[in-house]
Length: 402
Image 1 (cartoon, rainbow, N blue to C red):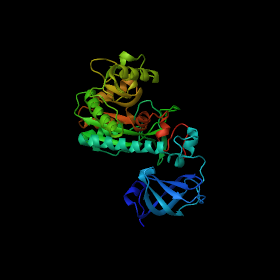
Image 2 (spheres, one colour):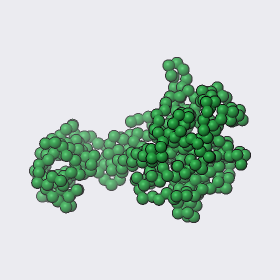
Image 3 (cartoon, helix red, strand yellow):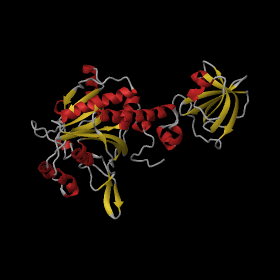
Image 4 (cartoon, helix red, strand yellow):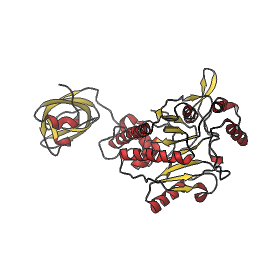
């Protein structure tokens, strides 16, 4: 018999079928025993004689049996008269995953990721990650954006001043890409509107609940803009499409916006600042989202377009979601001379980024874009206290395995 999935059992009442998956839980009563099998579609209940010998939980098994209706069973049907065949050696698990929440500490969960990821909450987060990525792609495709794929081994750092992972590239120094920024800008000169889904690498020694050394960035870049506000309008639509794919969260048509200079001192927002701004947006506008615009040029990369009406400030923005920075974006420089001037004013050398800067002699339209931190978005949507809870195999200051 060909294998069917747990969700299909109710379609086969009165038939003998085969299901296969993991032995999720064993329940023994005086007069009857139950086995709960888990597959990619959900759970299936199997009825056994009392005292039946069963392998340990998480052992992979194949079960053939007769499907009968039972309204209190998962999906409204169950298997009786089962024949059980073990497909693996008995599983040896350090903790249980059938309970509503995972009991072990987060480090223990991460050490045993192939097991903890099977838990419903962790699987749901991974499914949400996939749905958000799908919605991101579909939203931008509807707006005539083209997906691109850029190198992750690069000659120079993308973000001025940020730490990078260095590597030996056939005897030459190279780095893991901190973002696809340079390449997505260059591709605006080819396709006008582009996006990418891919890993980025930041060798910054943050050991917080919101930072990873490797994370997934959802990037977009678009040409022929007037300024950063055109980018913000596209971003609003994309985030609305993503949120709608996985939740009932409403994204306002006009997301509330505040100027950096009105809400912060210094040259950057602290986590406390972000929380305070998020609370203001929720209280005053009923919005989980809020734009912060006009960041100081000192905290934006050299390719950021300055605000022509406000010296020292930029046409850059962040989008906060529930009090945490989710997206960074803005308008970019698009003239060669402006790049040379920007680097000189910062005291940064042209040589490490010469091939990138020289490209702007070829003719580029005014352009801008944004980057969404995927894992951070999932963490805020699920209410996870730590971004590692929604990341399959996180890489951070301390972790290289599994």
